[in-house]
Image 1 (cartoon, rainbow, N blue to C red):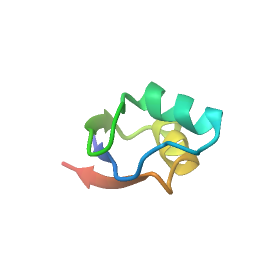
Image 2 (image 1 turned 120 degrees about the horizontal axis):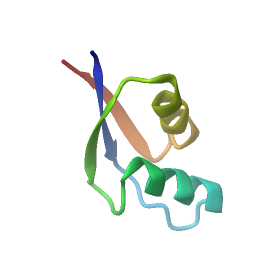
Image 3 (image 1 turned 90 degrees about the vertical axis):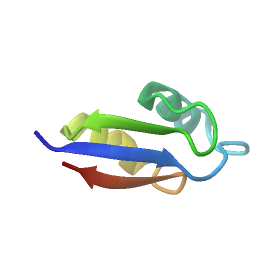
Image 4 (image 1 turned 45 degrees about the vertical axis):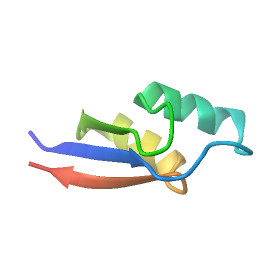
Length: 60
């Protein structure tokens, strides 16, 4: 199964509360944090919501 590597590249300071909550639910707490999640529609949607704060790469 494919996996996604999600890296927080920008700070959430000054962003909306729901963006902060989305980062927290992805498991990202601070800049340069990295999490690897399964490639599911729910995870892709969350990454899409905060696309201006994170980078997403596919990992095999």
